[in-house]
Image 1 (tube, rainbow, N blue to C red):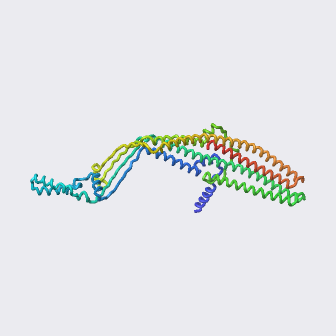
Image 2 (image 1 turned 180 degrees about the vertical axis):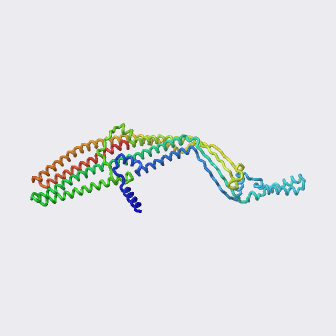
Image 3 (image 1 turned 60 degrees about the horizontal axis):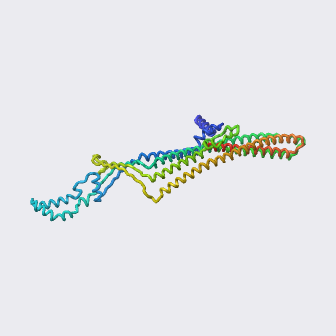
Length: 470
């Protein structure tokens, strides 16, 4: 029992621990198979694939089985049932009443054919006026019909072929959509990793600053004993230390939130990562690379191709359609006849249909499809120009931010040197504690500004990378 409890505790600790020391490359691999939004996009993709199968199936036609069970005493139905099940007799036509009248005439003639003929001629109208009971008042009967029906298109004017092309291209579009979702999630994951790297840098510098402030606090305490520092100096440094602690707490919280976001993207608990050591690489972007790699342009081109196929579909409406059908079945007063071959029937046929006039609706639809093709063709050109404009803007922003990073790196380095100088001056009594802490605040400010600009640059570089593939 103790062993079981121990194993359970260890297993729980392992589950809670999550993924440790996760690298960016491994995270990207996990993302592709585990991200929920990517999975949803793949389901959408699969649904589009089944649309292709549905269109292909129309070429093979449809085979239906119909079983009908009926019971009726309607004279027309009963007579029709017997004909369909091949069971009709002369008695069903009312011949029993007719034969009875003939028999009475023959009996009255007593073998005299002349008298019989004369009597038949005189009684003819009355005989023909007889309403046969078997025909008019039949007994209710059961009737079962089992029928197999097959219909297949022979010629559709190219409509089915173009529908197949469109559904295939719509499936390709869904694949592009899936890739776009995946690329977006990759961008967000990379951004989160680089954010953690910057937060780690910020925390590391804040820890160093905190040590310096704590060391300064001890120095002031010693200087107080010697009479070289006052209580307000100590309190001012203590307040500064509290401010640094607050900034540290905020930075750690931001790091925790970044881990939560990474865990959400990977659909798994991530407890630690290996943050990138270097900033993301600026990709080479040209018009040729952008037009050959960007998914939005690929989607626009595919959309243009779909509108071209749509024109052919509209043209097919003015062409004839030809279809064939075959039907086989059997009917009987029982669900399954004793001998199906004596009760079966078949029908085969071909149907040709062509619309001759519908008020010009088909022509209007064709012109609309042609106009839509021109519209989408223009959108392709617009997409190319718009993406290149966006790429040019991002490239310009990256250059500007790179220059700012270099500038703030120098400013931060200088602010650290100034702080160290004022620290020495304070010990010599040349500068006040306020002057010293102001210089340290400037150091923190430059650090925060440096990391802020680095974060903006990383975002723009990653966005530029995503623009090529997304």
